Length: 71
Image 1 (cartoon, rainbow, N blue to C red):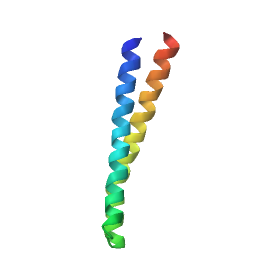
Image 2: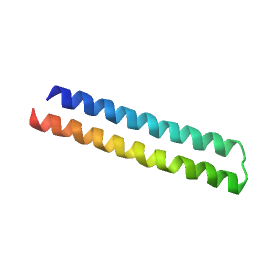
Image 3: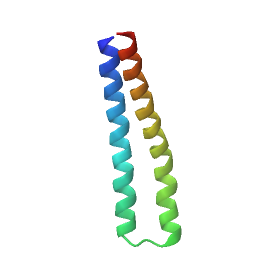
Image 4: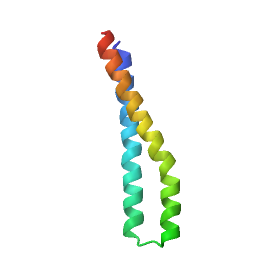
């Protein structure tokens, strides 16, 4: 079950990296003082990545919990 725990931690860290990328991307767009339409385009592109990264984080944490419970 150690493999499930460590692979879950890796998946969760991958999702966390994706979330950090989304925050940095939106933060740089806000600091660039973009027009409203341009800011909406940036947010429209970041939203699916943000959702996928959140899903990866949740799945990774579920794998870790499952691995600990089965241990």
